[in-house]
Image (tube, rainbow, N blue to C red; front, side, top):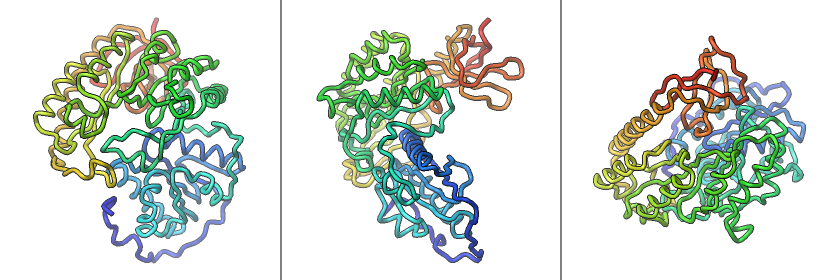
Length: 450
């Protein structure tokens, strides 16, 4: 298996005497990877709490559960290194038990058991009841959507479906998460109500593919209906849509975004590339012409919308001409938010049959060049905001500044708004009207509006 480098010494005996902890069991859940993993960890912690277990998130505990990511090489390497680090702590008596769950464990359990045998047990993405049993807990079916959130109190992720039916050539998600499974609208509304009662004001809608929502349960796409149901939840002020797929996008969603003040004028729609022959090889079910037309309809329906996308650089067969086409198109589209990453050659995907023919240094150079283009676009758009007053949510206080976001920004991946905490007071978790005083490539500086 070419998932992680061979660690020659991790199975060697240690000279340290192992002393089992005598303190009361405390379970430390460690989360790696994306927002979907954060959600899964929160559900796990909620179940443990309901079983009267002492559980913490990324703090000290003598029992450790690592929730892994297995999406691309960098994520897999981080997951493996984290497991190895805790395995060493187990050898030296710093922790008593170590369990591994999540995508990497789902995909490579047999190999991991051989490579890192010090882990007490490995569990896949659908093994929550078994993991709970190993932790001395019972799966509580009545805990519909109840969980211990790990995000700042003002926002939470709402996972509306699991798995994916898309055939994208580069993606291993269906191997790790299975087929698409939507959650019923009434269950999600109830979950949102519970979050709102706990002080959550912003719901961030996530899925492997939010565009597909409802097709399995209702035989038609019902993302728009779900958004309308969530707007009826008292206490929720922002609803933000992530991970839409461009092919088959339900355009009644645009009507909801335009009409409902609670639904942010924001969408995250990973497009991956724009070269027709690469889109065909990627099995994306669209073309440059169709994608451009869709984005134009977005702009027409919701002119103020912030569109976030992500792109893959260095996919097999990507030529300099393909890259030049992509650069030109990004300049024309002027996305408000954009991220990109290097193609990762994943086993058992359709693209793995292709030759990974773009050198790593070329992939990285293309990533850097495209992000430079985006930095300039973002700088220009941010300069246009100077002097304007925007409604922002305050996520945290960091050193001498409060850090917030506009409705056009998602946590961790998008722009932030900074306010000098030495001169102004803001309440973390609340909304505030802020006047933008200065702008950088990806961040804004502001003061409370007068």
